[in-house]
Image (tube, rainbow, N blue to C red; front, side):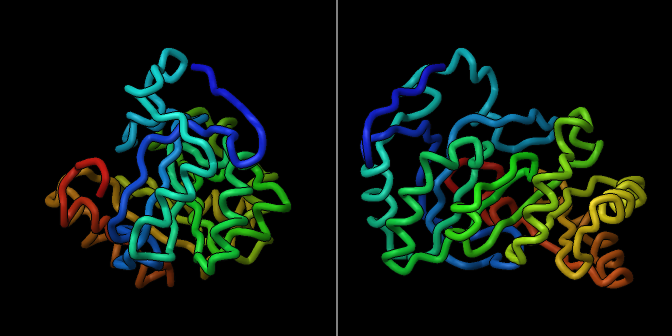
Length: 240
């Protein structure tokens, strides 16, 4: 895959989709938002529900796997919708943080609230840390199937924690994940009052079953619980 880079707001970014829905996860669950989903990811989580943003990315074809949009085109598309709440997601959007910064600067000047979904393995730049209102970081534990050295990186986790803007959302599959979760929180000194647990699942019944005991864990440990409203409301579909 090759990205074309031009000048100013004509620099391009590979985009999977831009759409309007509600935020389905995290502390802003239920809020109407515009979603900017970038293409490419540096991790390959086994249970990922947006594999279309990274599978076979080296052989991806523009116009089929992604659209190469200029920064100006992206801004225009985002402003078409009736919301000034933007969720930048992926894939892994911080791969494109240099190209994204002018877009976010323009939207902040137009009073947008901006949250970024990240796997927390890439350190945000100082400029991005200033621009973003909220980071939704999702450090991956071993249930992701990703090598630990790729998924847990102290520099990026520390920068996100110190920003004071980050909520740390962990995907939980089973009770065995909880011991590892505590180890990660302690190892990287993550703020326990900003920990969110979310059940893994791409169908409502699985989410319902896992949610029941995960809620009990949240009550016991003082963590937050996150639903996956996009799944329970719309199913495992794109642009939701």
